[in-house]
Image 1 (cartoon, helix red, strand yellow):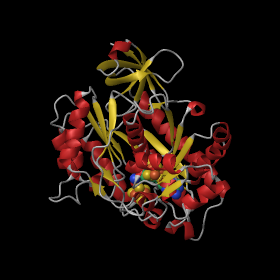
Image 2 (cartoon, protein in one colour):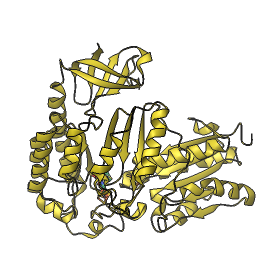
Image 3 (tube, protein in one colour):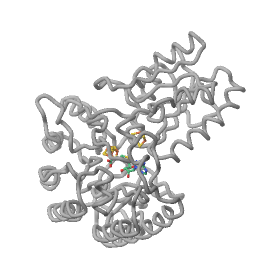
Image 4 (cartoon, helix red, strand yellow):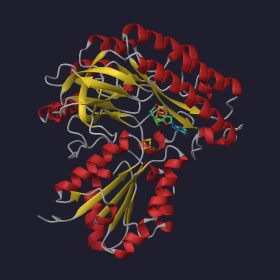
Length: 442
Ligand code: SAH
Ligand code: SF4
Ligand code: F3S
């Protein structure tokens, strides 16, 4: 077969959206005969799938691109491709090719399904190809996906975002919201179940507005209830839920449907209503706390996680303390904490009262201390309990333990039989820390 001994290497930065695009790029390359390698130096094709949500994501790309110059010198046939969200920013592709003229292919988030075509073209024509589409063009179904895990899979149910939070670049680089047809989603999940997958995470920047653009419209809770009927599927999770759109019927669906896991990722971003308004989030601190209350009432033991930004323009010490007190009140199980990063083209970038770096860092450290305490407290409550764990594989710790997750999303490390990978087993929790649980198979 053509390309039989050829290897490709993909480096992916950013969120699950990019991960999924990389799985599709990988699937397309495998279909053309290429194999994957984890060693950059051995690759015939190197792809960088970039993220631009914060400045440090971009800095990583520059550093890694610079290091490729040497590889291209020793192997002039090497093909280097750069894609992903960062390339969708105005003028970025041109800036990259100017600074790194050895790059062969640049494409964006809307045309990654065209990659095999660009690859052939650059090989035939011997010159660099830059192709960025400014607009999304519906949804391309049926691309091969080369998934990382055999046990759990991510399934995107909608692309893009309409929310335009004032700090965020995602709507500019991922386009407007568009939902996949429920039949396509169902068929994909049924196919995965046949292959032995047990857990599915539904993905979208804002899954709660799923289906509003479909004709006829279908609500997210109805989609969830439909998926709950798929035989052989064990667990369904989803992210991300925007607090302004998470409706009671979704909470009810979780509490009533056996496959829907008791876990919600509910980014709060700030605990101050004043800052939330400036962020264009469309909910207040009180709205958020009421929502959390309702969730905890209807889904006992729910695993709650969040995203928080510190140092948004105009954030005062009082605003920040409101974030700290909210964190203490909600007692999150996990939180992703970020220092506000200016993104060109977003409204917040031009706001007055940008916060000095040292203040941002100081708040960041205090926030981490506060959230770690709540993680530790919640995890401690698992000690002595027996939980259902889906065994995902070997633990990332250096010993030969296995790892898996509870329905609430907790990471559990334990000694056990490798033949249990892919199975649901009961584990007794014996120890805990802020980030994981230690258990014994029973
Ligand atoms: N759609 C999801 C996640 C989008 S990006 C949501 O709405 O929650 C993931 C997280 O990155 C965001 O939740 C936010 O906390 C953070 N983020 C986005 N833009 C940022 C910026 N300019 N600076 C710092 N953090 C940012
Ligand atoms: Fe960004 Fe807000 Fe959309 Fe999330 S909801 S992707 S934070 S604009
Ligand atoms: Fe995700 Fe980064 Fe793009 S967070 S949507 S990969 S900008």
